[in-house]
Length: 221
Image (cartoon, rainbow, N blue to C red; front, side, top):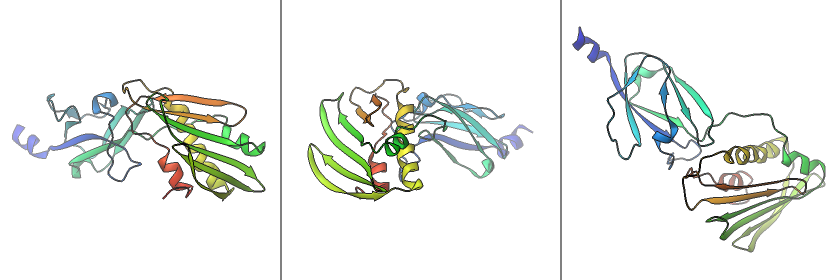
């Protein structure tokens, strides 16, 4: 009976993954994600797998439900319904729970005020880039600076889609303020809409970046 039970099991590697990147690489280690199995499966006896980057899960069911902590310090759970066919599970540590919060983005557009995002490296030691978005006549006029030099200017038509993309980045900024400090050389973000400011240091080693926002707005390639 035991041999039949063992044969029915499949061994699944559990790893962390950044689902916003094509290759999924993240510096957020699995032990920081604190994965827990909410169904009946068990982890294989603890071993040191490649600097705590993965665990082995023993499975004999079609469904697996896992709870873990994401890079924003939120508790997330996720369910896999084809578990018997899997040999690897990637948990999306950059996935976050959305929430209702006043948006500086929408407020700045309503008041025709500039929205400024500035980033610096190494505890605000080295200036990296600055994005200025000013709403006017149905467009967001933008100026983009890299290392103190203006490299691009233009305008973006204001649509719900554009506002949602920027507001999504804003919500992530708010969440990142709650991450635990573990890196000594993170990136700082300063967001100012003329009414309020968000200032925070990302010491999470998460790889969080404004590059995706700049690409989605077609400011950078």
